[in-house]
Image (cartoon, rainbow, N blue to C red; front, side):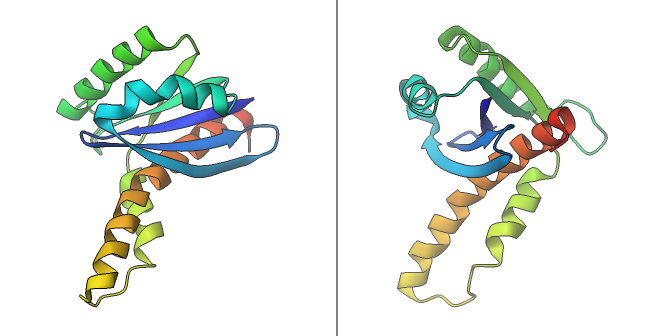
Length: 144
């Protein structure tokens, strides 16, 4: 089966692709939040997605936060737009780990050409976080 991992953010939404039979999970793309619902059905069709895995933010004490409520609202809207199974996956620490994965590519100089690269890598953190969320789900449910 093919899966789409989603890391919801206020301005950007990170996406990842995974397949439990081919045993892969990779960052896919970033969408602006305002464009997400206009694009999602095309992505699901183009990538032959069977199920969705949405990251659920909680604090380190496993308590729901204001951001958790925002993701629940997003989930309800998503259920209105698509008819695929949607799973929630704990996303604690995925943004931190995703930032670490991407951060190793940043250079600490302030030349103009590097600023553009830093912005690109910063946005890639969202797709990396989505991949970590999806990877966690696939490992827990499919022993990958």
